[in-house]
Figure (cartoon, rainbow, N blue to C red):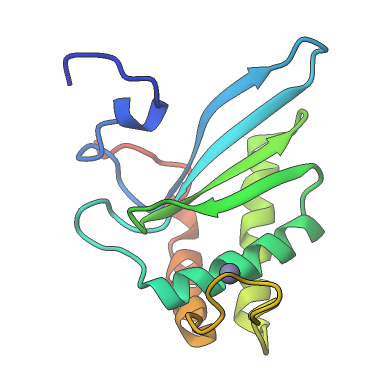
Length: 155
Ligand code: ZN
């Protein structure tokens, strides 16, 4: 990559990362001192694996609802278009370990879920496109590699 691009992740060499991992993308501070932290939560190895859409979509609904029970000031958690991970944005200061712990608790909630929240045509834009079992498979695979989450780059 010769030229620096506007989007941080476009400057990330996706051939050098080692998924799964949790990476702090950056911190933005507003004029009043408030800070927004953005994380790259990579579930699948780029260009080798990806999450299938129905499971990914259900995982999005489940995590969006549950992570707020484990972490304060979550602004958003949303999937990447490449279907290999999620971006998580948090307002205000916290520790990296809190994010790791909250993610683990959230994924354990996913394993115990009996339904996908808000998977209906009133609350979702593609209610037919869900898979609770798919979400659980993704969550289980991620939890099984919990000890790798802090390592972003291959040696
Ligand atoms: Zn939806």
